Image (cartoon, rainbow, N blue to C red; front, side):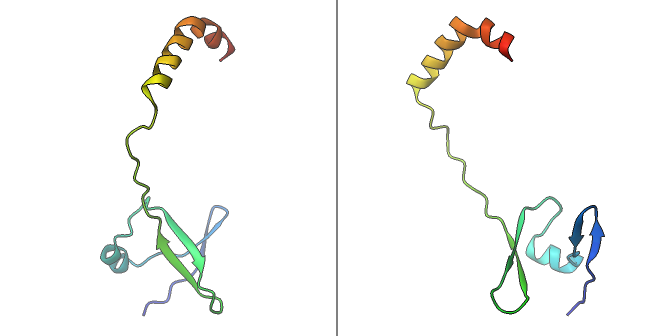
Length: 82
């Protein structure tokens, strides 16, 4: 068991994950995690955020056609508003 010290980084309090544990469990820089209370005392759990499967676009052909015609007709006006 390793004891870590909480330190300040910007406006956040931070706990570092020891390299051997990070490697063993696949915790790399940039990984999205959740910190959640266990519900027992003052313990916390660090959990990986599960990736959401992004399926192919659900935009219909009809919508794509409508968007194209709208941009063709009103593109100049929309550019001025942007």
